[in-house]
Image (tube, rainbow, N blue to C red):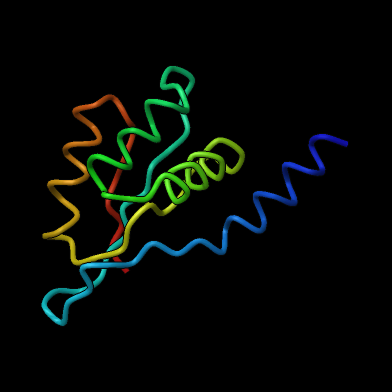
Length: 101
């Protein structure tokens, strides 16, 4: 029963789209963060707020999606914008990559 509730919540949360800093300069890419067994929800949420400037609600929702789905796109922007953000997340112990369209 609880798993059904979580799955439903995650399906709804997948509608969260995080796009800003959109520019005509450079092709859009996605910053993807993967689930792991060593970072706490609190730490991941804090990282998303500090590095990506997400609201608390965005950070919490993305953390849940990552936990239940294994990964999530946490930001879409030109690769040049995403690179320092990815590096900052990796420096904080998160597993992140940039994927280009």
